[in-house]
Image (cartoon, rainbow, N blue to C red):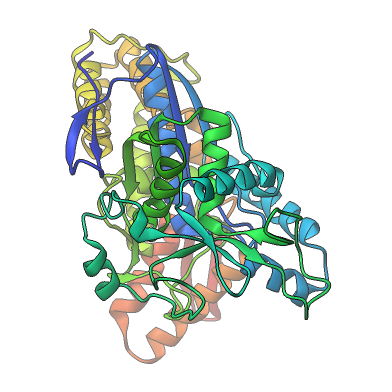
Length: 460
């Protein structure tokens, strides 16, 4: 197979990927802050980097994959207080929910999944190293901050100068800081809050800032320099920029050779946000459609492109995935095979090696499915299943997938859609009524209009 090229945010180009240690890739991805259920943006991060680690393994590389868990921050503390539960109870509950969602989406567990609260000693060591190098200071409020202007490389990931960053970003005004761009490494405990969560430190009791967590955990588990650091595009600045400053400021060497970022999620053309009311958790979505269709929907877009979520796009993904399973169905539960010399496999590999080109790789799957439909070739059907498995698709028994069209659809949601269709018909909005009927049909829910009302039944 050809060499792998990945888009490197740091160099702003597609660079050939060569691991530091031959045959072994060390990768760190910023994970979830566990105070609520995972949303569609989290799903995209999990699936995108799951595909990357799967492809690295397909290339014959050993992968040490670290995806952290932030289990202490302001949101977590507030939510635990609101719920009247301990922080540990809250975070354990949402970590379990995160695993349920990830498992449903076919996301393989990382090699290591460190919790921030288990690495406070390493964070304190890192802060000590930064203070010794003149890159951190304790301010008048007792917090320890990173001195941004003392680190010459600050801004290299975002590609902006300090003045541009200062002008373009909303920076918290804090009179105790030497510079508004300086960011907190250690938050001093407040004497007025005796029950505040805190740890002892050389600078007094307190708790770590958000950015220092990832620098400490990645170094502890992957070393001072590793191969790939990943995460959502929203983390590029300030989080990843600050990680670079902390890690490279303390160790005097590059933190990661490749910085890989996935694109934003949009909903019906708008940015997904709670304030707009278009915010969807993974489990919300899985009430309406099966998890593999959601994974397939994510993979049909390139990981760096915006992902536009809509019910229509999701149903289209379901219908497309059904076509692939239909091609496999006549062969039953045949074993997968992979012959990388076969022409479709070579095209698939070329797509994946070009910055994880999953849209082009998926197109190859459809070409192969078309050939299977025409020829009835069992070997090619096994190849289709094998290539799908490389990116976490097509591993269910085909008949089970095709017959489970509506088994997981929530009954309350079905009733909601039936009522919405009735309201649309009453308003003579027949286009909307037809759209709702088609959406239900894609889930295997058939509506029959009768004189006495609407009969709802599930197709096979």
